[in-house]
Length: 191
Image (cartoon, rainbow, N blue to C red; front, top):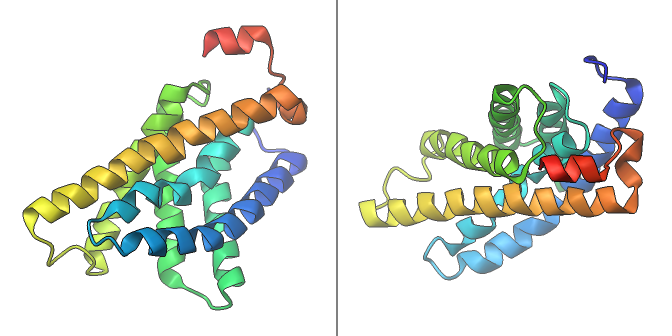
């Protein structure tokens, strides 16, 4: 597999980003509905906003794909919202970079569930300083902050990591992803 990105890979990554930009905007309704509980249970859904990077990488395991997918999804999200939101762009950039760090550690060779879950975990952690910078977390009591962080981390691992892994695995079984890397029995045995 070549190291550089082909035009077809970039286009598919942008297509994935567009799909997730729509999902991200719709997911906001789910997030807000769960937020009513007041117990930070909405953070259990937060990992959905990291999925573009993980899904794109699992389909096209190359350097830069996760960053491109997440940043493009963030840009698409602001377009769909009808207003430019710098905070969304900052979150998207940080989320894409956090995923790239994990994929780089594994030299862009592993598509395992563990790697996807690690990417979700690090991305969840990486978003917390931004929340502090925007003032979301500065006034929260310690127990409440622990609940907030714990729920976000669980969501990063389960929603962004594991759910993305199973989505791509299902796509692999349909044959849709064979253009970018064939999924064979040997591939699944290596997972």
